[in-house]
Length: 308
Image (cartoon, rainbow, N blue to C red):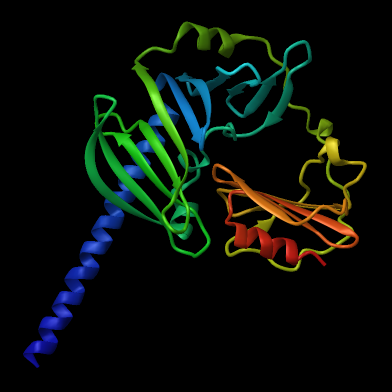
């Protein structure tokens, strides 16, 4: 009887420590989100995908409950993106700005902006050890997937401010796929003058009628990965409009996966990865199915096979 009671006590203590660790993990996560949503900052970061390196400057500020952020690619082929409250502007050279409605810039890491309620369904939050990164004390936070065939995320945040210093995207087998790394970060109490000017600038408003929706799909998608749902009425893709037979946009609240169906070009089935993004192309006698998104190759293959 005493052994049984001791065993029960050990189980209770283990469960209590797991709950405490999970609570501490989500507390750290909320600290990261508060930093990127509430602070005035000027940061530079790089995105590493194998041998490919993309560099950006990211400015953010708040003033009288108005929020503004500017993402500037430091490579020549990028597009400036500005978000002012719930309007997002793609600033194109020699062409009018492309304007959408949204709460976040999708080119920034989605893990920094999605709600804890949604992420807690998909991940466990586990605090890790502290280390020194770029001369600053950094706290590790691991977001480990609850389901198979889903990526994991390791985040390092500045111990003082909570600002994210590094985000690693890992495969199901814990292999590194992509790294987001801050190279410079400055937080200030005042809104920078260049953001204040953009906050006051006369900019066009989003025009919902200008977003063309995809026509109804000719085929059916009979399989979805865990936690993913089909997005209703996705925007059209003008580049593929003439040849596209079916198109589905899938989302689990954090990631988005596109599935395209076009006439077969007779090329062999192929799969490869661009960082954390899988591109899978399957050809049959009559159809070509392309799957693009942050999922494993096995999941992409099952999605392609699910087109009927």
